[in-house]
Length: 194
Image 1 (cartoon, rainbow, N blue to C red):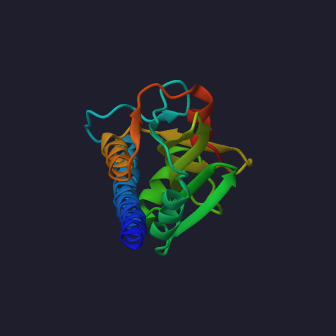
Image 2 (image 1 turned 30 degrees about the horizontal axis):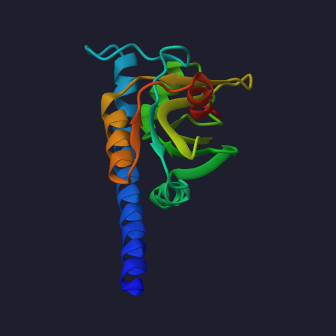
């Protein structure tokens, strides 16, 4: 009986890992669409989406509380961020990101719209921030456009895209997270780290 119980736990962990990796893959795809939509919005196309802005008080994160260590989620995120033009980075403790290059037309529009640097290309960033919370962990997710400038500054351009946040929420739900509505400001800021 004990072997069956341990196999079931192992199967559950593998299932959570697969759900997280599939969810992260969908988020990266939605993120690519977000990057194109963000630039189209800047290019003057008629749209009902909010105007993109630098990170600030309106920047949105999606968060969930997990009783287990989020290591499997981070491993799945790393596995999902392996296509050409995608880079997995950990800019600081507790923050993991998938940075995606954009297609040439969207890249050019971002450089022109935000006075970017052609030697350091803009990237779409899907970010996860983890922090201990009580007996578990709080995981926050966000997405933004990272645009380096010639003078060394870097802008974070945020468009609170419902598709990306909806897919983050679905991924968190699928692997056992409990939604968190009020995200502490410091956790939200960490999600937008560079």
